[in-house]
Amino acid sequence: MLGLKLPTDPRWVNIVEKNIDEILTDHAYCEQKAASTAISLIVSFPEYTDLVTEMVALSREEMGHFKMVHDLILQRGNTLGRDRKDDYVIELIKFFPKGGSRTTQLVHRLLYAALIEARSCERFRLLSEELEDKKLADFYHKLMVSEAGHYTMFLKFARKYGDLEEVNKKWDSLLEYEAQIMKDLGTKESIHG
Image 1 (tube, one colour):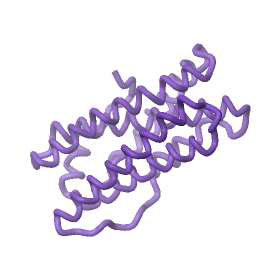
Image 2: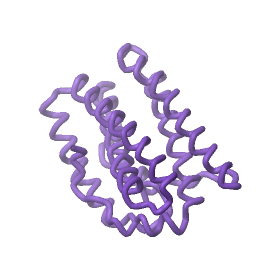
Image 3: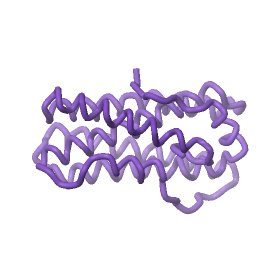
């Protein structure tokens, strides 16, 4: 369903289980960045009324997820750590050239967002199935469903605003590029890394 070309190595869950607190901090910031992306799309493309409406709802939902993760961190007797760079996103956003028409820029941003959500969904599914901590596994199952909806929403908007054939070609190329990135990731205590 997600179209990812390279699945996450299941051994990544072993890294997660040894570094739950680090993963939770990274996850909290991923949710905050997703909310920021939604707000940025509103600011950059206010003329797309249907997109703005969805991004308002998404920013609220993502901050709700941030709160859920933060609450979990506090319940575990910890505090939110500092944000770190996301090597996955840094590499991913190098794919499309900068510039182009406003529509092209919008489509590229939507495709990046769709892919980040798809990878998050795939990782959350793995956590929901493999984590020994059943409370955390249930937590990630609930979030997995939400991420799948975000992925399809972003992809739907990209296909709506751009030329469908061109968007589908770009999506396929981006998926191939992302698979290459993922070959070097999956060894760190982060959601995407």
